[in-house]
Image (tube, rainbow, N blue to C red; front, side, top):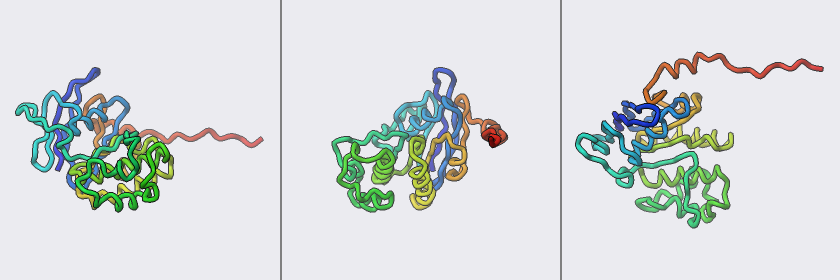
Length: 227
């Protein structure tokens, strides 16, 4: 289980978050732009350090500020997928997926699962953005992570690819058996994929923000009278 209880002073506010995510479950992080969502992911990943608090996975402390304990990112055994994942341009799709993996056993099965088996020997600059993001997912999972962190991984994708990857993530979630943290601006996506939704506003967990969004009336295009 992932346990997070941290505080970090940012330019406009102090980020404060405390929550848990069980293995095989997905916690969706939502909220307005600038609420601290990406910073929270970076703190969990070990890319930044909080000012106070703890982050632990399965009882092992990754961050404990009072104890002066901070496990670096490369020792946290995490899978990371961002909106635009920087693949290595000089490596093929297969080589990118295998980079950092403990062995090669998962490479081919993952490529087939994500529908990119035919691209194994292609380089990133010769495939589409959606195919690059599928490669990024494969790379993250080939590392056999204990935790998967997703920061807006679908937002720049076309509708077809986004729908495919959402459905695939929903199917893989219980099979992976690890906690998944998923940052998204799409509330429908959060509701479909998340076992729990954590709303952030101005650095605070704010369930009332989520309530306000669900109470908003739908916006309809104005009708046009026939000529």
